[in-house]
Length: 315
Length: 281
Ligand SMILES: [Zn+2]
Image (cartoon, rainbow over all chains, first blue to last red; front, side, top):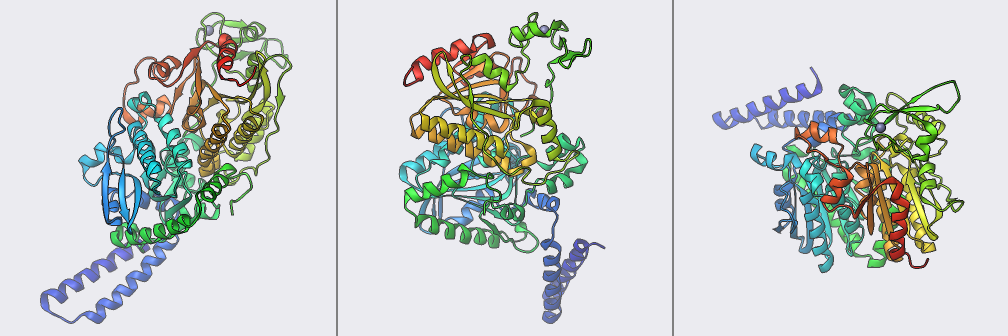
């Protein structure tokens, strides 16, 4: 039996005991407490040393906390802004203005959807050109009002489609990077799930880049790397390792600022604890950034990106 | 952002009597056997069917700048193989092979030159070097070239031939997109114009960063311009690609470039652009 299977058995047993306690009024407190301690310990063991490929699976879970529900739990108020003002609106990349711990901020986030209809409409979080043109527009609103920009990423990548190309998705991503880089107020990016390629970096040219423990950030999907470089899609787990796409690896390389711990078992096991952990980290980084005068903020930002990777590990 | 491999070889080299440089090449588009010198004289455009063959960075530069005017800028030193990446071939071996095959140290050649008398800083990608892909070395060289252009107040010219980000450098490659846009911001702050020339292929992370942010954008006839390669689009979406999809003409019709220019006219076209863009002749 694997640790994960043993974990499942223990969890079922605990549920059974709880049911008995409730139905028959038995006092099973002590037994339940022992079992729960065992479960917590086993969970920590199982999840502390996950392989990069296992983290890829966690990052991709459809029930991973992200999207609109995450934003609604994160902020006291959120008002969505829609449309790129030229072609249309994109349900996969959304954004608007929010109140976060009393602060006004602009928010941009990928939305993968909870129901099958929503997931189809948002192409599982793959935003098209309209999404990135809209993101640029919302960042411009924030620039005029000197509001911080917070981005919450969870995307396999930008959508590769005929319409996306016709509407210049490459130009839209480039414009997002440029707009974010010039932004006259603090910017923080948090990778909640998948940070896939150009569709992620478009929203990650930030003063601070944070990742949830089991989130991934990669130039290409492990499957894509496997089929291009190994000519064998089955070696995706190996590719996931070689790409150094985990939060821990990227923190060691000095490319991200903080790894936000997840509840044992993964972010999906505790939505509100995950939101709270992200909120605390966000507020801390925003406070640090807001203490800096604008010219210092921009200088630090250009230093960060102007020579990234050229001097060995960044820190 | 995968490196596109299809249509990489647009002609077959035919060895005739054992010289190092084959004398004849066969056009894959029309099958014509062409005397290599004649193909060279025709700037690597098939004299029979007009198919475009790749230019090396050196050939590209020679085709654009005034004779004897090019002075190369040194590539900034960067750590090599930052991830220790090994797939079927160690990345270090791939680099060594690309260096041997091209005589280049990396996929970019940068320098200063004159075009019709106008001083420019230029950076040219070479597709033969790991698909013209952008890793730390290319990103750093592009940033340095833009910084030079900004300081010297010389218009910046970027000739794109790239499949995108260099996969073997992981997220570091992705972050080069941000770096080259930071360089682009330097040009803007110094009021220095930027001209992009998109050729075959201009895709992935290079197009989705610096390649799309020029003041004036020209597409070479025969270019392929798009974020995702055609095969990726077909496989992911099952969509049928319309005829002419992602060609230079498609980019022009969709408002993504200012002009489509045949290779033989590119130098003359750049001279016209510089006449209205350059601060001084
Ligand atoms: Zn031909």
